Image 1 (cartoon, rainbow, N blue to C red):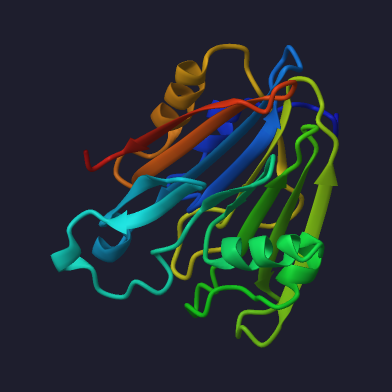
Image 2 (image 1 turned 120 degrees about the horizontal axis):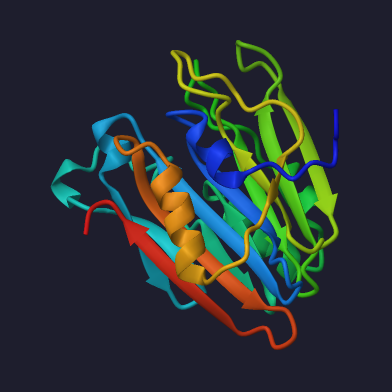
Length: 237
């Protein structure tokens, strides 16, 4: 068993019809670009009624059809916010919690000690978060229920150097089910392929389940200059 194997990203994405929400952080094969991706999926009408829209410092989710919006509490948030040359990526409103702590000079881990998994039992959806640093290193975190009853929160943080051609993929669910099974273990080590931003967008979008995928955000950041390119894809155009 090669624990340092870089798994095929398309295969990982297509292995499950419902990985839920997912964060990918890594570095391009030439070592010049930090790669960020965030996608959302949904099974209910309320979850599927969403799009990504740009904000000055990142993106936010928005109801595609406001008339059909039921409970906005867990589906409307800012998944991506830039802070200086750093980038915060999460699957919930903990984006703002992390930003507020970082602005005070406090670490992401301390911010997430004030938060827990989502109160959507019996799924107890994990809160997943990523923080990309200007040098290409990054942190990833998952807050998940310690048991089936949601009686306590287990908190895990992983810190990675930027490695050429290597990324990590963290998602909320281990697969489809009822209740949905929570992601287990360390973020999955994946290969970041060579190619353009458009190539990477298409690889992810085409690998996600056609019925359940909703929106995708991808960003390439030049590690030397801090400049970036980004793309949003929404199933609802």
